[in-house]
Image 1 (cartoon, rainbow, N blue to C red):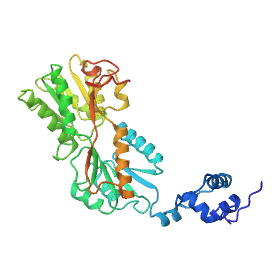
Image 2 (cartoon, rainbow, N blue to C red; image 1 turned 60 degrees about the horizontal axis):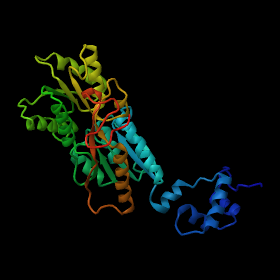
Image 3 (spheres, helix red, strand yellow; image 1 turned 120 degrees about the horizontal axis):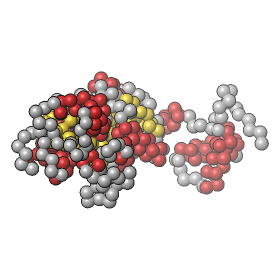
Image 4 (cartoon, rainbow, N blue to C red; image 1 turned 45 degrees about the vertical axis):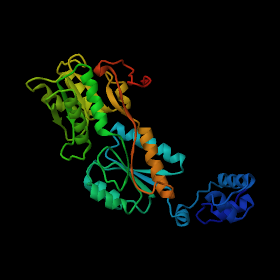
Length: 357
């Protein structure tokens, strides 16, 4: 069968699809746009013609009709970090199921870059934004959210006027520290940051850590080693400060798994055994935690649920079916106990089924 194309550029148009399918252009539009119920026979005719011609709907025309582009932006600090890479993968999967495309930006935790994305970069090509801010202040975030549908990720304390999906950071840090106390550890240090803002992730985790020490009657506030970032090299650098104090710790709670991997590497280089001499706990439960040596005890964050919840909230806003007021959605967390604190290699979760590596 020979199929002619009336477009000079060679790209098939809706009129070509209608001609090949033997139906009207309005029928093609109804099938492709989902505007009206259509019969299975009509849908089959149009879909066969679309496949035969290789027709791609004009996105600009669709935007004019619906006011949407079908594109959602995700802005995260660093895609090289396993936590954000896994989060982006889950969000892309969920978006595809809902008929959206994800556009990903890296901010490197830079305030100017975060503000540029939140206040206008790409706003002409996206329907909404999922943002994990590290540096923007709450007032600037709230102002930007008035111009575009936005959902925030992360454990910082963020403006109540903007939808936010997070875990209970203070409670998670408290549980991680309590696990070390229950294992008989008393000189528990912590490594992480940033700590210069009481609303920051680091400050919230520090609050939970210190609350656990106080509840256990441990008077000292603990050895706190702040880091500028939450990466492996920062953890390795922190080991020098941990071991060169008057009395080294017998446990370390790290604010990320990457820091924990760096700490364990640094301890190994100094001849310190984990967990025999010093136990180590991380935060995030990235895939590598189940395969490190020793395997890492860590706070598990359900990234798949975080991503899907954020998308559901954002799509609800776009479709007008969301909650009347913005709110904070708290997603569950739990501790996975592995070898770095004396647990089994495959990990177990107190009160839950064992977690398979």
